[in-house]
Amino acid sequence: MNILDRYLWKSVFVGLIMAWFALTVLVIFFDFINESGDLNENYSGLQAFIYLLYSVPNRLYELFPTAMLLGTLLGLGNLASGSEFIAMRAAGISIVNIIISVLKLGVFLVVAVFLLGEFVVPKTDLAGRNFKSSLQNKNIVMVSGASLWVKDQDRIFHIGQVWSQDKLTDVTIYTPGKKYSALEMLSHVQTVTKKEQGWLLESLVEQKFSEKGVSIQKIASKVEQDFLNPKLIAIASVNPEQLSIIELSDLINHQKENRLNTEKFELAYWKRFSAPFAALVMLFLAMPFLFGSQRGGGAGQRVFIGIIAGIAFFLINKVLNQLGTVYGFPPLVSAFSPSVLFLGISFLAMKKLP
Image (tube, rainbow, N blue to C red; front, side, top):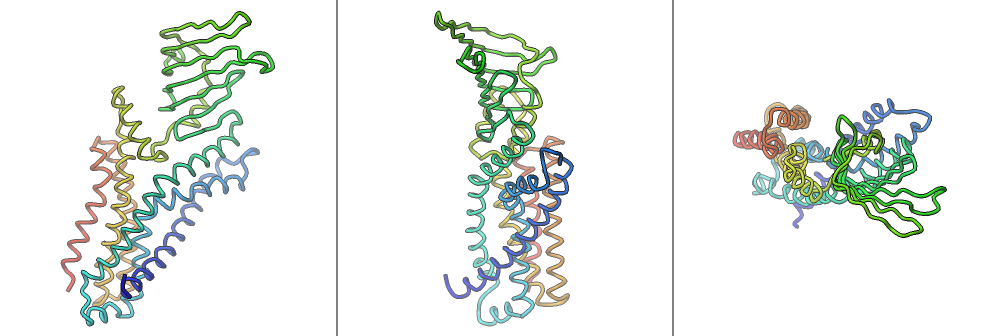
């Protein structure tokens, strides 16, 4: 790392932190307004704020591409307005060298944020969901992205996988005796599906404990009307955005094996890779505005246009992701198309630079 790299990296990093902080605070503020609709005697404003603090890593991850663009414009915009880029080029440093130097920092930051999204975000989101669900319902505790413990009436459930509000797998049911003195029955159900007539239990094994010993009964399938309170499942329905890449991969394979729709899970999977790529695209997109500000229009005007471009990318990315789901576009295309579009715009703008 030479002096130029350190100088450019410091400028970009300071601008990134400022933009990242401002965007995160703004989004958390609107989240708090939205969360205020759920406030009641069991869920106060302070508790809502604590719940939103758990979502900060996820917001940092989501806002990183936009913050990268704005931070680069803010940090290097000061250099452009002070004609420092002109001085660098007069000293023999080309635009390509400056871009490569900045991209080195971008790659490092992208790797760090990718690790944040893969290892930190799922854990903090789970902790936040546990915190909020414990306030809304004392009988539910989530232990991973898709499994949970539930107490409903006199039975305790461990649900290995919550696929949706209508489908559960690997369910173990503990039925204690009077006053919870001993375990009366232990049941395991391979698949539980919500039907019109009730809950359909498939591959059920019941073990009953008594003074005479243990009796085991195997049942291929049966229907129970009051198997489990649907409201408890609604709280813990799996959200693909809150799962790690490995969990998403397992979930997609399971859905395919059972001939179920996988689009939303595949979209979430590919977005884990498109988000870091989008951050590098945003970094590259900032360059035409910075170097173009050396002539006509002024730095302030071009930086402002760059900020509008960042906001446009954020909105277009959300819209194209949703349109892809509605109209059946391949998830890979839906995830990467906004970044590819803006990358093309960046290359066209770079070609017009002197």
